[in-house]
Amino acid sequence: MMLKKYMASFLSAVMLWGAVPAFAAEVEHPSCVMLKFDDATRFAKVDTAGTLSELIMEKLVNSGKFNFKETKPMETDMAQALYENRLAEFKANKTAVDSGDYNGIFESEEFGENRVQAIDSAMVGKIVNPKVTKAMGEATGAEYLLQGTITNIGTGEYLNGNLVYLAFIPNVYNMFVGKNKGLAVIADVRMIKAGTGEVIWQDTVVGRADQYQYDVGLFKIGSLKLNNETYFKAVNSAAEKVASAVIEAADKGVLFAK
Amino acid sequence: MHKNTKKYICSILACASLIFSFDTAWAADKLDSYRDMLMSGKYTIECEDITPEPQLQNKDKFAINFEWRGQINLPIDNSKAVKHCLAVASPDRNYMEIEVVRPIGNTAQRKDKWIDCQLIKNNEVFTYVRRENLQNGKVDYLFKESSNSYYKSNEVIALNASPDVLLPYAREKGTKEVTRLVNAMLPAKVFPAGKEYYQKVAEGELSEGISYVDYRCSTAESINLVRYYLDNGKMTKIASAIYVLNSAGEVVDGQRSLVKVLRFDTDVDEAMLDLPAKIKDKTKREKK
Image 1: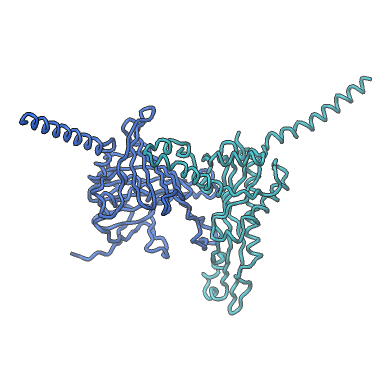
Image 2: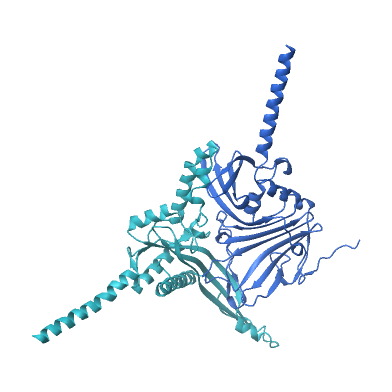
């Protein structure tokens, strides 16, 4: 009889032991959604933002560390939503402008020192219009919004350093010249508290892929021509770095507000 | 009749004096001391342009700058950061610097800070970068002859400057936005014909000793409002709202900006109005 009691106690203790970490994990990871990245480059029509967002989402979902409300990036364009909201406010203020009483304009929350006017300038501690973020949070049931901006996609050439060292040996320079061409994707990523619009965490990453070409006398080995594979590698590299940065921030406990 | 005439004259004079005193009071405002500093060309203004300019982003740019061994030199995206500005002026000289304050915790943050500097003296303009190493405190200066050339250390070549750059409205006080907002208080007479200027439209008190003075400039394309904030008479902030209008006078876009004023007074550090001792002036000048 006693043994049964001990067994029951032991089993319930084990069950409780198992339940506690699960509960704790839920507390540690508030609900969030990921918004499709904003592309602030001249190549927005290529939809790098779509590819990048999906790759990041996949990596974050696979990590099992987040309480995502959706397993696909939300199509909601925060940059556009902020712009439309701002324009509506300016239109509504026109009467105050005509009346000559500007208190309603300058003393509004929009003129707060921490308030950002555009999403791509939203750094840690800044406030994104809460009307917009709150509406997004309520629409998705998420407490946090993971959002990002592609700030640059570009290429550049450089000499391969190791081989250039050989150039200091007489007559070797003409034989071995290594050239690299890189394609890079630079992106900002940030976590926003939906209820307040506060940017809790932010980082900048650079994803890149390189092509190599070695000139050996009259011969060329490799090619500097960029292709789809290079482009995808660079986007994937950016996605990996964004996902790693987000996971690292979550592990350090700095991704969400305390 | 004679008595009545006297009465009329007295009334007219009283009205005139009232109108005159009202006009004088209206023209003069809490910004007089600041306006006087700008007009006399002797001041120090330190401020932070905390609201980014409209995003031009990288839509006009393709190349990414790869440094030695392929390290990527991240573009300095000025729109993202607080710009710390300092302007020091004496009647015959002007020094101005702008620093982009990088966000804390950003992995892209460099280990040094770069401050764009511009000195105008003797009808010459010196443009260079002051680089401060944040780890060992070492300071050096960098200069580029053209956008395609390499940086040279601790030397500079001056360009000729028009004497007009030292006029009150033309002196740079920091970023373009800081200069625009500070200049809004200048009287119409200092601007060349055809150049837009602001007019005072209102002033008042807010809570806790904060007062404000409002200026406005209206054109067919936009309505520009500027509010100066004073804390017990000391300027602390300048806010601006721009309403972009279409041909029908409807608002089609808008822009807000905010400048935090850290200092605005007549104390001038004369040393800042000369080239730093470490910089060699390599300008080739004709011998007189």
